[in-house]
Image 1: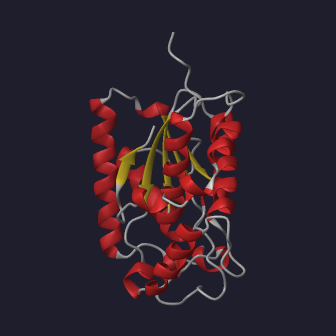
Image 2 (image 1 turned 180 degrees about the horizontal axis):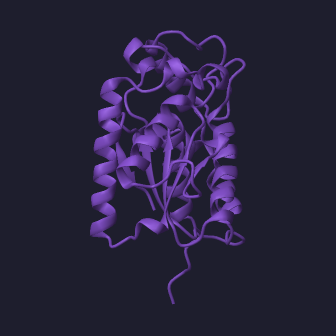
Length: 227
């Protein structure tokens, strides 16, 4: 008999379309700045979100997944909210309705005040730190491990509210890399006392797994089936 899945839903991820911060070459990672309307999608990003919505619609049709089984869960940042809203309009799902849910724990990694509103070039410093020690926080910011903790909370929220659904998670590059990393490792993990989601993720929350999250990187507007 096949081992039952530790998840009650199927998951897809979508990184937000090209944003105004992307165009300006700025790191915008705090809730305070990230939710500002001035940092929503750039026109190119709106087009990417439209294309992602059309691709997702095609995948749903090919896999015979009815629209009523789809849920869109998104980060509160303006660029992710904007992306989710565009995708919902393509699918003809009411954005303010029960099929769309904002989840604060899906927000961007906070890289700390020393990186906030600085050049994108500094991402290389952040990723080098992640690779060296995913449990080490940048000053005033979040470590990879911190992000795993809140993504686990987000997943538990989604799993408790929805069953047998296809979930589209609209978030940011780093959180979606980390989400794919932990789900991929959790899926492969076997051992005692790992029947529930939280304990499975806790079992794979180790440096050798978390330090590799860059291998799951996504382009802006990129859609991917996860699990």
